[in-house]
Amino acid sequence: RNSRDDCVHLWDENRTDPVHKFSWGSDTIQCVRFNPAQAEVLACTASDRSLSLFDTRAQSAMHKIVMEMRPNSVRWNPMEPMNYTVANEDHNLYTFDMRQMGRAMMVHMDHVSAVMDVDYSPTGREFVSGSYDRTLRIFSTTEGRSREVYHTKRMQRIFCVGFSLDARYVLSGSDDMNIRLWKAEASKPLHAITPREKRKLEYAEVLKDRFKHLPEVRRIQKFRHVPRAIHNAQVLKETIKKSQQRKFSNLRSHRKPGS
Image (cartoon, rainbow, N blue to C red):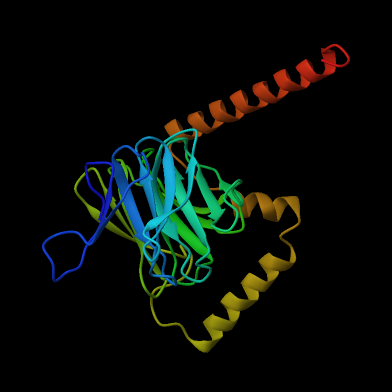
């Protein structure tokens, strides 16, 4: 259980006091998740920008990293339980391997504001994220860009998200006090389809996969309509990124030899 102090409390449902307390010099604990395969391992995020792993068997800390900005949520991959994804305040999500936490395996970008929550699909191949920018995005675990984005005019800042157990639907809870249900595959029909329709859909997927390298097909697959404010924020972020890259390139080109 997470708490308002700097400890993670481990409870037994038959006792009124915590069985054990874990602490590693952290500030307020915000999110705690148990590993789905090793129930003795848990991960927690704190408001001092730290991400910690604890082992309840040894009753000690395993590893701790301090990120540049505060992590808001963490989720374990249900099919690859050595990997987990962190939703961060810097608009990105980071996938780590608990065996080598010195560097993120993948950085998932597309949000333009703080990412508040993340949840994995039961298949372990995708996860959904909700952000302060009022959008819901679905990412592949092996890609840095989202494959789908959902938004509505009335939906406000998203604070919690979840995948259904059949991986067909996505749920979101937002600041406007509403829970929304979305399709994980936006183009997939919900009604029962005939064998002929099924073969047609399968054939269309094969064609998209075969010609995905073509610029025209790639542009259509990647294009998603987003609100004007988010589009402008994405353009501004890309401009700042290119400016910084150009600045560092000029510094390397014009510095004195040996400096």
